[in-house]
Length: 510
Image (cartoon, rainbow, N blue to C red; front, side, top):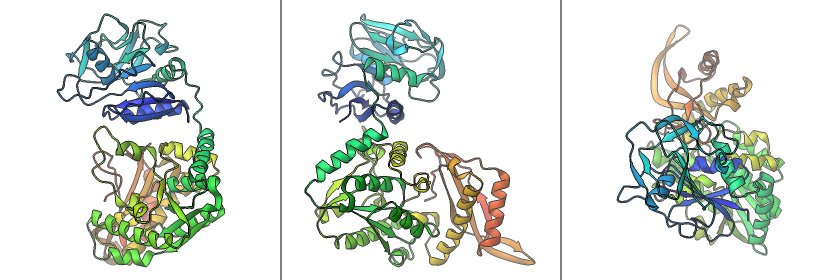
């Protein structure tokens, strides 16, 4: 196991950003709820207290138990974390009287402080809090301030504890990565050995140790990055004892099932391709409500997957492509997510078939999954593929799903995606696709009036899908795509472009 930094989560929207920044320093870190510390773990080299939507003055404010941490190992409080350190030690935290949101400039009082090594005086930082530390305890030393925040940064005398009221993890804090690096690498003494190669080596060994002497591993492939990298990692560990099942639900992109299946075979995976498109379409017949579609697809997938899995003699493990954001969500400080979409897992299959679950990617963020995949020589065509919804094109057809609608959408979608590739725009976009609307509009083709379907082009930029902006594609390109779709796809006479961002909109329409 790797050395690690522990992040105690108080519910901040920025907590995952802290983890991502630390991982970029090649240091492994874990996010845990504030009330579930693991300080007894001797691999924990330091602890970070996150921000929070709460005030330390709230009656239900989250207060951690730091008796096994504070003073023993390095500790850094960020925003709420800093305010809690001051408040719990006898300091005073009150509502801010002046603006403490947005850009500010840090006046560093102690240039010898190791937290600010190689950070220039006056560096830009990002504030985002409604409270401020008014008075600090006697053993607290102020190390930085801004024009509006007197106690902007501090350390505790004769103790490896620091607090900062700004957010070093966000983009607008110009030298935030340097500050976090000073804490993690210099103060905590982490070696920065968390790399894709080290992850592969340790995970392969762990898989072999966990599954030694037991039966085969079953993995459902989707064609996406997560399941593919999981398969490649498991294949390196156990070889032919991994049996992959790739189900064609009829809702993939044009010719995608065959292309992806050929890629899997070329990677040396032991894979079984199952054409179940007729079953899925029959289950979707007459269903228009989005969540009802998801449930129908999830139910059909479990049925097909189970039938195929039962043919495998000696199966003892079910592998899943769970990644770290899924794990964080399930143990969130605010409790588990209210809705877990059925297509993201295989329901009760592990219990039903008495299978043990193995999740080789559960420690990784999405960008780290891609880095590991690259180190495993997973084809770029799969690694760089846009995210694609589990229910596939079913949720890009608003209303009921029919073979004719699927055919129209597949053709239009293929034109859009292939033009993105042809014009070197594909890799500049996080996710793209076409949505078929339950709307028909009047058009003119030749000398005849038409009354046909309208489609929406959707393309967004993002880093992790949690927020997204519409991709600013060139107008000439959009005109070319629209013209090609209308001319080549019978049944479409109008193309529009979605310029909504997330939030308030979502990436998908259903």
